[in-house]
Length: 315
Image 1: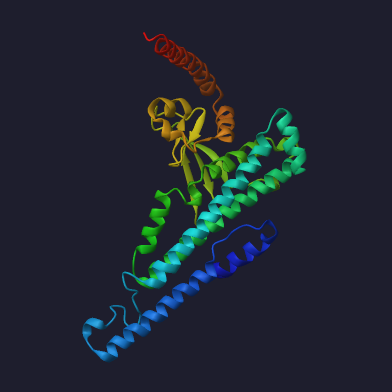
Image 2 (image 1 turned 180 degrees about the vertical axis):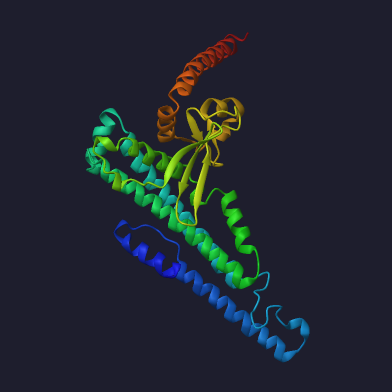
């Protein structure tokens, strides 16, 4: 089955959830129209002024000009808008799911009753798995349509567009919420003896250690594998009390606080599920870091209030 048809069938099964999607079929039509217009334009130029220079280096295939109103004005803007909506929807739904799962106290009672998911861990697991599937198939859709763009145009503009999207942190596979969902599923899998059916869990992900360095490994599909390193690039140790910045990188909370400027923290996400996973998998390391962090936070708090007091007294 061709991917376009597979993608359409998948999104049809998600109709009642009203999830945004990549207009794969419409984007293919845009590319077809662009190719047709280019062939007609080149044939017209050849008939008016026959010249070897006008011949396509690929025989009868047409090459889209460097600046194309069809592609530049329709294809890329449409794809960017659709991917922005997909990523925004994924992040919002993943956040809501994990808020329900991690809620405590009165807020837990309120949220769980409101969403009618109280005690239904299986329903949470199923929703999380569906969200991961949604992320995977849309990531594949974007890669395939950009690959088709480059194939038709004999260019690397599609690859460059993908790099641009990644630099803007709009690639769904860069979302810290995907990291949280993977950790969420691993945590649920470890609790399956408490009434969660293993068939409902996403089995293609695990926490692995390579020479003592941890990472989240997830086989998202037959052709797509995701590896998320969990070593803080500041302290060069396993991330502790981890946060994901808007750039997509993961750091220890205290390392980020000590090394970054204030603006760095805008949009930062505390990775609670990942912290739960690491604290269970590395209990001795976690306990030692916890002790050291307490000492460091007390020291920093004292320094802060001493500096504030001196400023107030004008010393």
